[in-house]
Length: 105
Image (cartoon, rainbow, N blue to C red; front, side, top):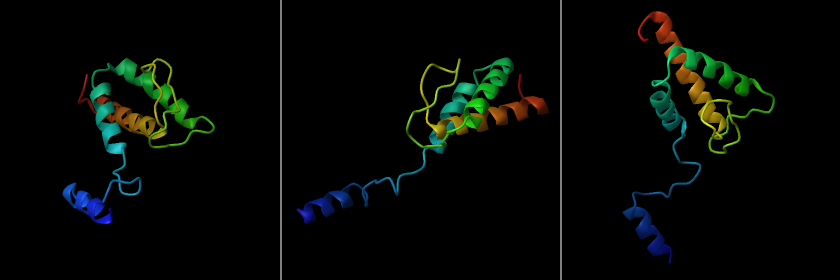
């Protein structure tokens, strides 16, 4: 049985994916939120920035990777992980900086 498992592991590209060697999801969250925020006008970005920052600053907030514990009013009606909201805040900040520099809208 051990040989079969080793064969399958080699066939599949090496070590099995475990939580310790999985890539962090922050990159995927950042890509997702960039695509989403790009569609928002500056007023919506400002409103969402304020709401997301309030959620991040709330007592008990944890930047967990996968557990969807947090909702943001008027965002999308879904629960998000803490790390996803941190990525959203980072993306909004980048768009706001670009808005101030005159590169967008």
